Figure 1: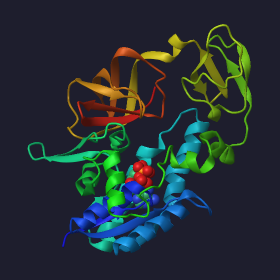
Figure 2 (figure 1 turned 90 degrees about the horizontal axis):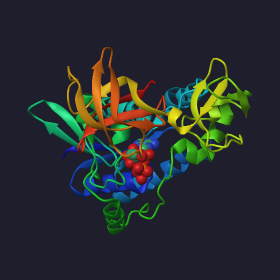
Figure 3 (figure 1 turned 90 degrees about the vertical axis):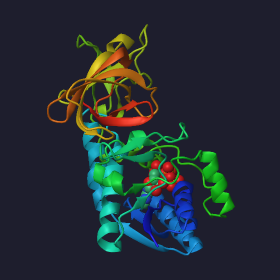
Length: 349
Ligand SMILES: Nc1ncnc2c1ncn2[C@@H]1O[C@H](COP(=O)(O)OP(=O)(O)OP(=O)(O)O)[C@@H](O)[C@H]1O
């Protein structure tokens, strides 16, 4: 019997992924990563729900304590990023270095298993011509999580299985109900796990960063107001500036060195191009000449036409057909050809 390890968060998606594979005849092992320190965090409840599902399916359940890795790779990464004036995207980093990497390693070393399934909505296809694992958007466009998976290596994609990639979310709930899974009606997570468990990103950051008051200025350096710490702001932000002005003002940059929030009008936060670092090419090898694609500069943004110009050291320059509003350093830019994810990286400037 073929063995597969399923990453179980305790939610309906991963429970259903496990149940589908179990009913297809795989030997399924449930694996829950213990991510967050502290009692009462979402993981504690998730672990119990995951254990329940394993009991229900009659499968083995492993819990791997990875709290230190989560703290270094996600919490420190976020806190350092925000205090340095960028807006990091934790989910792609978490998928690569906290979830898939350690799960694949644990499965290979401890469970003699080479396949890892998750409840992610995305699709993988192996192209024998190019010998690459390609990543595609999920059939359910509204649930598509390919954007958060752009940083997976070929080795991790080779091991990954996404049983929900061809389903609509309504199918998942229906299947969960048909199998009588105890998680079938569990509510959807609405936001980043850290935001859910802390109430807001600001509340999370305030646990780690002391207030550091400074000036809110325009591009000429004129002081327009005060802030409590640049970590409370993100590029393109309009609300919560506390400044009365005849025209709407937006955050156009964050100056960590001088502890300043710089604001301006909408045109000043709209750019024709940007540089992207730490690029991972997924479905194709790195091209030697510019390519055309459609890019998303944040998770829910509409894909927009772009020319991707390869640069040295795993970087690219993105030249948008139409200038883009609020390009945010630290967020991911991910470019596609139709549904095929070509590559992505971290927006630099
Ligand atoms: N703590 C964890 N341990 C093991 N696998 C996890 C864990 N958290 C998430 N995963 C895996 O990553 C997938 C996507 O995680 P995400 O946080 O986006 O949850 P989700 O889409 O709400 O799914 P679910 O309904 O399964 O919680 C999950 O379906 C699961 O397979």
